[in-house]
Image 1 (cartoon, rainbow, N blue to C red):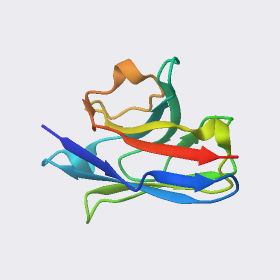
Image 2: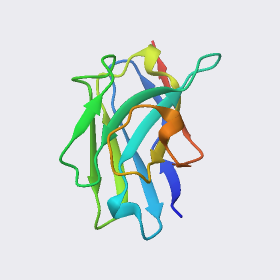
Image 3: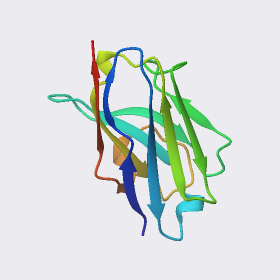
Length: 124
C-alpha cells in the first residue's frame, strides 16, 4: 500500500515557477515508478511526467518538455515536479501517482495509487 500527499500548488503569474512535492508512505515506494498527471476543468486527466523507481529514466509530455523537471529522493520518500516558465494553459489540478509494476507508463489507468491533487493556477 502506498499513500501519496501532494503539496506546493498555488497561484502564480505567467512566467513564474512552482515546485510540487509528493510525499509517499508505504514500504514499496522506493520500488515504485511515479508519475505526475494533471486535469483541467472539462478535460480528461493527462500525463505530465514520469520517473522510474531509480530515477534513471524520465519522460515528459511535449507540452511541458524543457520547462518541467521531475526528480525523486527515495531517502525522503518524495517525488518533485519543478515547473518553470509557467503558462495559463498549465492551470489544472496536479496529481502524483504510483505504479506497482516496475515498467514505464504514461497511461493514467496503469497507475495504482493516487494522491488527492494540488491546484495550480497560472494567471496571464
